[in-house]
Length: 340
Picture 1 (cartoon, one colour):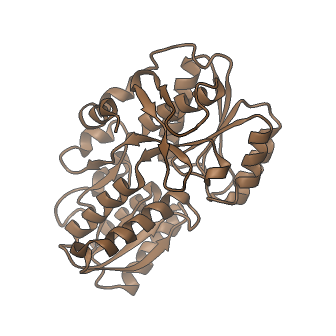
Picture 2 (picture 1 turned 90 degrees about the vertical axis):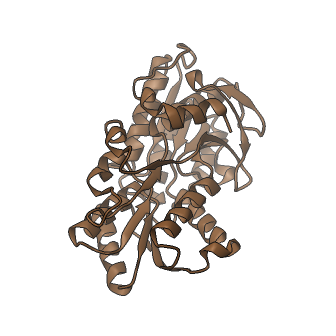
């Protein structure tokens, strides 16, 4: 773990809001396309803004592109258009693990560097993945939250994004494995994994359906910023006894977070979104300049974030891990909501 980054995450996250890249000129003339999952995702927009500011401050240009829908087919159309536009690199948050492979391989064959962040396509579809936090670390934090909030036993459910989302599925699989391997989770019953497709109304509808199907449901875990905000509002508006945790933005969860009966979410997690955008920008720029190729054990300097080493990802490809997930609760959410 990069000690400098951990210190930044835990002790000085607010500094990143005003931080600027330290070594101007690294990305001179570079042209990068940043592809999101869909428009309207506040998490991606914060990371994208940081990505764009970092590259532009160092002399490059970034075009942020959104597909028409949060589907693989829509992203394939975007990629098809980008490949013919002479970009030096494409950085993508993938809507599907495998469906984008042919287009991303086509991009790489055309000499375009391919990186990914937030949600990775498979290892053959990218050169490196910038991971916001280790998969197991995220899953462990979420499982421990479910165990704590449920009081050690009872029914719980997961409200995910799309059924094809690589990051969601990786976290969910890791959570299931943690439950199976540790006796302390034996009294928890995962009753369903529901999918809100990262749409507020569908996530709300799925929350309502879970409560109707499972009247004894104790906890919903939503590892998606769209899903957790929708579920939080529904649970609180309806004064549900069911509680919530997951991954969310402090600014969207401020009125729902508190360790009392009036709030639907005792606490939740996320990571440094600005740091993720910045690290992804430096990694993509390093690919373009051939400072790295994405190979295991390569190192590079991510501006004022410090030095990073490329490690092995869970899928056998490579990744760069930003750091540990951060907990947001009633003690820190007001300050964090000013940033995110």
